[in-house]
Image 1: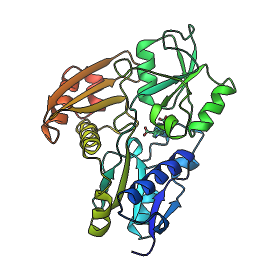
Image 2: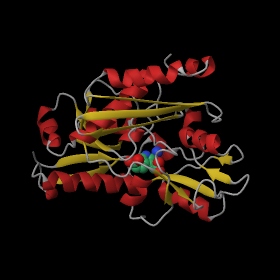
Image 3: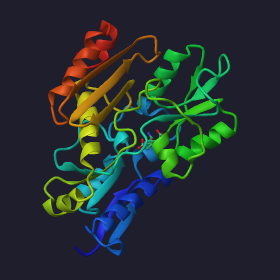
Amino acid sequence: MPIFRLGTRGSPLALTQAHMVRVALAAARAIAPDKIEIVPIRTTGDRVQDRALAEIGGKALWTKELDRALLDGEIHAAVHSMKDVETIRPAEIAIAAMLPRADVCDRLVGADSIEALRQGAVVGTSSPRRAAQMRKLRPDLKIVLFRGNVDTRLAKLAAGEADATLLAAAGLERLGRHDVGVAIPINVMLPAPAQGAVGIECRADDSHVRAMLARIDDPATHACVLAERALLAALKADCRSPVAALATIEGAIMTLRAELLSEDGSFHVHAQEAGAPTDPVLPIAVARDLLVGAPEAIRRLFGG
Ligand SMILES: NCc1[nH]cc(CCC(=O)O)c1CC(=O)O
């Protein structure tokens, strides 16, 4: 192969993650580092900054342009935060590999803890999951829309647009911002499905590239993220749904836990099942447990 073209979004976090993939490919001796070109591609989600993504309603905001570049042969592979990859992917595209997962938790920036936030404090987030989880814990909080990349959100916080915000620990750490915010334990705030996982996609029929990418795949991360995504599929949910999920593997057992909320956080249900890491029934069982406990109004929003 002459030059391996690795597509990515152009945000600082996306470029850092693409660089991590290049380093991993070189370390696995899959491709020499000087033979990998990182190709930034602007996506719809990057252009639209002023409205909530949920309002735009369109799907594939972060992936559509990268998908097109893959299918047109402009790039050989595309790097994604798996959290932003919609639940149902085109059949011509395969998730070929995932890097080892980073810290999965969310970090609270602007206060020492959720309890320490003053009465009626303003919290900036654009994530329906984080908004619902915060409202569940603190119905007095005022949630305002916070969009943009990690630095933009931190700048909005510094400018006083909110008292606090929530960011994924993984993104902060990859950007070298280890010092920003405090970790929220996952039993207080269960993270988004696929949070902390970087995935690499290629054309499904490109067996040569698939074999190269397989060399940097972390099987445990891959199995956990696939289970979390299968749960979303079973719920007919996507990254804009107030759903949290986390799979972990200990020994030969995968535990998949999940939470389903109403937008205002007044309703929430938690479920957990354990089984073999590749058992396709596990996510379906968790989805069923969640929906059994949900009132009709919530069930109607999801697959039940
Ligand atoms: N939706 C934006 C997004 N997509 C992935 C990450 C962080 C990195 C990750 O979870 O792997 C972030 C920022 C955030 O939620 O703080």
